[in-house]
Image (cartoon, rainbow, N blue to C red; front, side, top):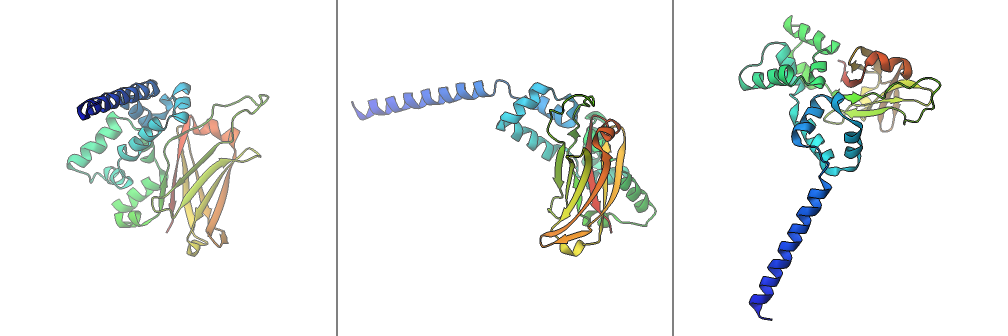
Length: 254
């Protein structure tokens, strides 16, 4: 076999290999979420179907797609805050307006209803606070999290306990909200900064129907930081009050 024939054979094998990979990828991704559908699901998580959630649990491609959209589609908290103050202009104002009014993003629309954020807006309007004070605080904003469908009291509990964990961008504030073995909905706040012992965290569970609020104190100190916790009550009673989903909003108070 000549060198030319060897090269032709190698090119043919390479072409076959590429075709096989393309077929394999097409087969693997036959049920994957189109970008437009993934974007719609991020904007409104109530649109998820059981089949889509099951697929997401086993598909790394779709999981990365959803994560990428979630990371890039939402305006910053600062932009939402300035929007409420009517201090945004130009392209940035158009982006936020479209996101809230046309996209109808559940996450960001709900954030604008935060009692703490509304209070800060009024404080800035009256000159009592500044935007710089907002930007200096550790803040946790979770994605919108669906709540499990209610189950009759006599029915066996087949689902795992509810659990969500979120943290601030710098990792200085972590919030975990979970259902305990006793059926309570408990929030845990953590920080690696031992100097924050005794400080308080303003915590809101921004539900579809109702917002649950609490002020949680870092009242326990250990070698890795500080911890505080708050029980909102029985999860079975609270879930209908929150609605189909909720998100965590938490900020370290001054």
